[in-house]
Amino acid sequence: MVCPAGFTRQTDSVNQPGSPESFQMSPVEEAIRRRRTSLVVDHDRPVEPDVVNALLASAVWAPNHKRTWPWRFTVLTGEARARLGESFAEVGRALGMDPQKVASQATKYLRSPTVVLVWVTGDPDPVRRREDRDATAAAVQNLLLAATGRGLASFWATISDDFHAPARRLAGVGDDHDFVALVYLGYPIGDVPAPERPEPQVTWLD
Image (cartoon, rainbow, N blue to C red; front, side, top):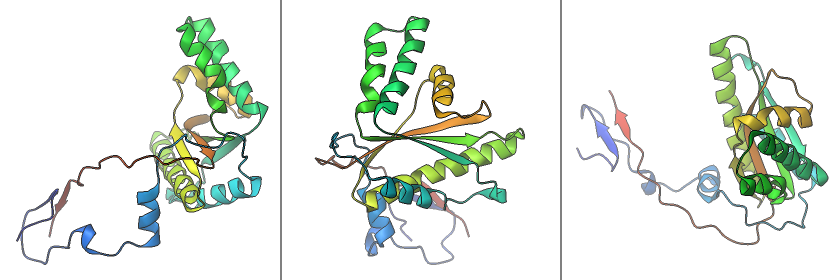
C-alpha cells in the first residue's frame, strides 16, 4: 500500500487514510489555511473593543489540562503602544544595544492599531508550568484563527527576555507572569502570499 507523501507506515493491516487534499475542507480548516502572519494593516482604523473581546473569548476555549485557566491578556491601543516601545528603548539604551535597534523599539508597536500581550501565570510546579504554557500557546492560536474568521490580519511576535520586566510593569502584572506572545491586530489593506508548507511527517502504527 502506498502512503501519502510525508507519511510512513509500519504495517499494511488496515486501510490507509487518504490524503487531506482528497477531502472537502471544513470551515475551520479553511480558516487555518487562510491565516497569515501579516502587518499589512490600516494603521488608522481601530479594531473595535467588542471585536477584540470576542477574539479573547474564543481564545480561552483552548484545551487546558487541570482547568487552571492560566492565560492573561493585556490589550494596548493608542498611546499605550508607544509607552511599551519607549520602555523597551530605555532598556536597550541602558544595555548598550545598537542605536538603530533602540530607535526601532520606540515605534515598532505602532505598526498596528491594537497590540495584545499574552501571559501565562507561572505555576511553581515545573510540569504544571509547562502544561499551562502549552495551553496558553493554544489560546494564542485560537485568537489568530478567530481574527482570521473576522477578516482581521494578525502577527504573533516575541520580545527579548530583557524586555519582559518592563512589559510586566506596563501591564501591571506580577513577576509570576511569564510572557508568551505579542499579537498585532488590524484590518488588512493588502494580501500576504502563503509560504510553502512541507508535508507532515507522520508515522501510522496499528
